[in-house]
Length: 120
Image (cartoon, rainbow, N blue to C red; front, side):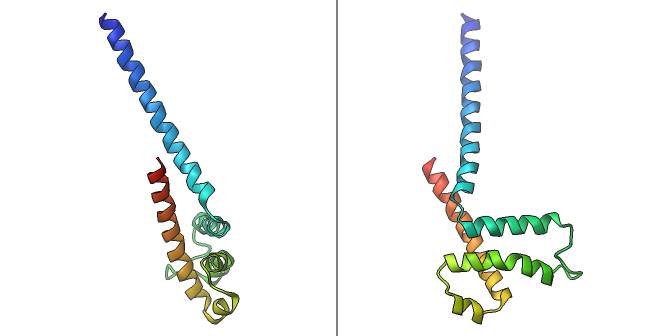
């Protein structure tokens, strides 16, 4: 009798742990699938900068011209997805568009995560 109870408890915890792992994997995949084209491009550019080991960062720990040029096309896409038009983008500088894109990127990621949490 004790063996049966012990086996039942072990089976229960094993199944419970597997369900938690599935939910975590599904949540990660869902965040990636919800991202817009601009978000995916911006994320890819950020990862490239992170992997470059300082190639896109100057000696003052600021984004270099090459880093700005790498991020700008993706930032422009995010800005256009947020409702900016070409004229507004042209009148603002690259750094202003990058700042706007960073804020939209973080805002959208938080929104995606909240949606996923509410769905689970």
